Each structure stands twice: as structure tokens, then as C-alpha cells.
Amino acid sequence: MAKPATIKIRLNSTESGHFYVTKKNPRNTTEKMSFRKYDPIVKKHVEYKEGKIK
Image (cartoon, rainbow, N blue to C red; front, top):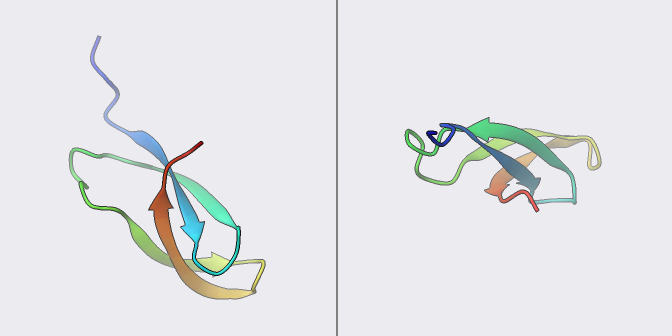
């Protein structure tokens, strides 16, 4: 059986301990993902960087 094309990743906030969980296709997107998303703990948009799900 073939491996699935998508893997789950965790987007960790650079300001607090908040995180989002999303999927990514590592065949198409080989570099680490980075987004500006809303952090409800600090109540503003901050940078989120990709990390592994533990």
C-alpha cells in the first residue's frame, strides 16, 4: 500500500503556547510553513511556524 500524500503538522505561535493543526503535502511543499494567524491568547495576529505533532 502507498503512503498517504498528506501529513498533519502543527503551527506553533511565536508569542504564546497556542497552536493550530493542519495538513500539508510534503511532496509539493518541501520547506517549512509559516503564516500570520490570529492568536486568541495575546488577541492579535502573530507569526506561526511549522512544528511536529508530538
